[in-house]
Structure formats: structure tokens, C-alpha cells
Length: 88
Image (cartoon, rainbow, N blue to C red; front, top):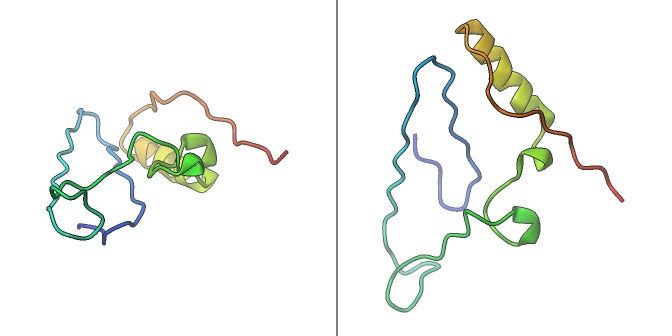
């Protein structure tokens, strides 16, 4: 499945073997620099204007569902615990 442009999405591997993901980007006129390459801010937090949702900003249900799926496959999560940010 390919999500529509500008939709947040995630990749999960719940199996015991490592997975590799390959992202291919089409070039077009929408949201592009003059020479045709889109500016993707995937390494910047959405809170700071980028395209990435940090673990502490995501809905805790996502981590819960991921860990439940890992358990079904006998896989232990190697992700560090995350504390949700609190409002100031």
C-alpha cells in the first residue's frame, strides 16, 4: 500500500528477522524546488515543522499494538521505553 501524498504513516516489522524498507519518491511539480526535487523533512520533528512524529508524541496505543503483535510472533521489542510528553 502506498499512502497518499503528505499522509503520516509508519513501517513495522513484527517478525523475528530484520527487515529493509525502500522508499521511492516520484518527482513532480507539486512541493518541489525549481530543479524538481521535493524537500522532505523526514529527519525533523513535526512539532518543529518537519515530517516526523517523535515516539513520545505518538498515540501510546500505537506502541501497545506493536508490542502485542511482537508477542504473537514470540519477538521481544528492542525499542527503549518512551515517556509521553506532558503539556506545560
